[in-house]
Image 1: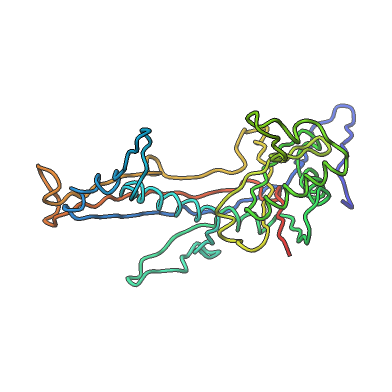
Image 2: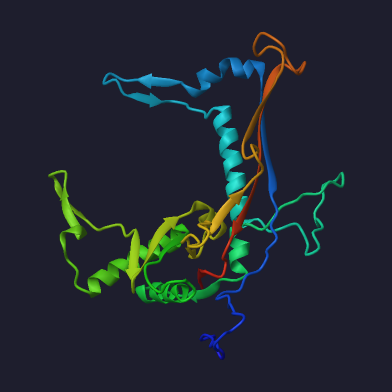
Length: 303
C-alpha cells in the first residue's frame, strides 16, 4: 500500500505503451490421488442378502416396521468410497515434497501419492480469527476482510462451510441480533397445523454492506472439530475473465468413478474369474482438488 500504480502519460508520436497487471499470479503444484474400496461376500450370503435387507413386519394399518435391516453391500461400498474421497479432498496433506518426490511408501516401496486437500491449501494463505463468543460483529468483520480481497466491494456471495457447533452458535447470535433490533414480524412465529404456535426460525444467510454469506453445514468439519466451532468462509465467485470456478475437482478422463466385479463360483451361472465361492465388488477412482485463489478466504476457530 506504500506505492500504487496510477496510470501513464504519453508524448506525441509515442512509439510504445505499457501494461500493468493489477494482481499477482503464481503457479501452485497439486497432485491427483487414487482411491479404492473393496467389499466381498460368500455365495451363501449373496443368496440370502435380500432376506437380511428386506425383513419387515406389516401391521394392520398397512405400515411397514423394520424389525431388522442391514444395508446392502453396494451401498456400504459406495458410502465408504464417497467418505474417503470427500474427507481426503477436504483434509488430506500432501505426501510430496517441494522437489516432486514422494515422502510416503508402503511396505513394498511403492509411492503413496496424494496432494493437499482444500483446508491445507486455504490455511496456508487465509485470514484467521479466534473467537470466544460468536456475534454478528464477528461475521461482519470476516465479511469485510474477505470483501477487501475481492474484485468488487459489493455484490459478492460467500459460502461459509461450518461444523455443527459453529452453526448452532450462528443461530443463537442471529436470533439475538434480530431481538436487539426489535424485529418481531411473523417469520419469527407462525400457526402450526392449527394446533398451536411455532416459535423460532432457521437462519440460512446473512447480508452486510452489499455482500451475502450463505451457511452450509459440513459433517466432515464436525468430525475433525467435535468440541469447538470451526468454519471456512470462501468467495466462490467465478473468474470474470476466464469463467474458471474458484474450487475445482480434477481427475483423469473416464477415471473419476470405476466399478468392477470379480465373480466366483456359486454366484451365478456362466464364466467366472475365481474358484472361490463368492463375489467381490470394487470401486476406484482418481481425484484431486484445487483452490484457485486461496487468499480469498477466511477461517474462524473457537478458542
